[in-house]
Image (cartoon, rainbow, N blue to C red; front, side, top):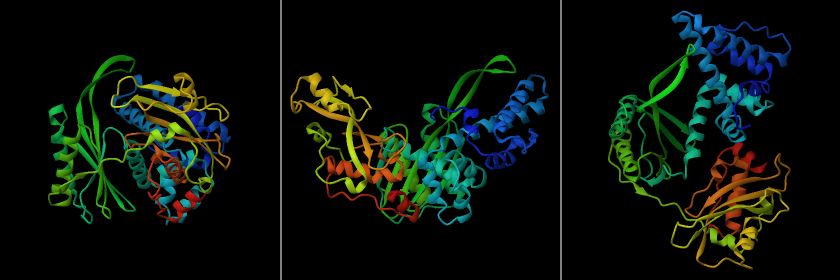
Length: 419
């Protein structure tokens, strides 16, 4: 479910997990719950009690107002964080992070994805936060604010908090011209083979209209600007998500070398390999067998075409989702009155690939987007589908056949790929 509804979300949480969450949360002081009541009635009772408390804030003292409004605010914020992490990709990351934590793996083994996220939030908050940051960065890779550079292998990333704060403050000064403030926050997370630094900088002043105690007010706030770096010491590659363009990326990397590594670095930008999407114009017959990856059929759901050498006149074709319907390429041929292949003046700039696995899955298929620039959404797929997606790109001659598929790094990942 993509839309967050607290009542709907809580209906999928069992009593033991919900009780753990409540008893470790600031709202516990506001609630008097009889946990022996019918399990199905607990969510409505909790939300009803919090709604009554929120309605009574108009008559509350200033001290009670701050205490109650803060606890209720955290309650809904934390529920939403659990909701956003209640997905197969996040669950796989939890399992990888807890590969040596038998207690955690046993506790979440039989839980629903929503319950797994809530349990991790409650009892493994560091793992939950690290996974949050990792997936947040992953979602931005290959986007317009993402770049990859080579800075050399073996650099030691400082653990000195003062140096990390100095780096964070130096980055904040880069954004000062756009109205950013001085306040910063930096978090460092370690995963196998990578070190991630996530910075939050006090953004420009933003005005909001809202209601307080039934009165209309305007408030000003500063939204945090997010910057992140992921360094791979073994390969010497660093990925950055930075707003402001290529110059700001390089400036942040220079500050990273100065404050975090302790010496200057010379970053070399790695241009993403372009995908040969025009290969799809001749059909989706594979150049190699993809059956070992559990793929039964592949269809082109969406296609974006641009005139060669120009971005003007772009048009998009979308096919029905039904497996037995013509795909986007067949529809495009009909509309363009071309019998076999497209004329060379048109290039395929983007595509959505629908994959029908041999195994039965809930929706019957999964899909990912690819663009001629070399970006894709493959990283956002569950781990077990990523090798299949890469195999499709090779089989359709979109990438070079000799490119290696990612190897599983842990026992949990191996199981995930083998599912």
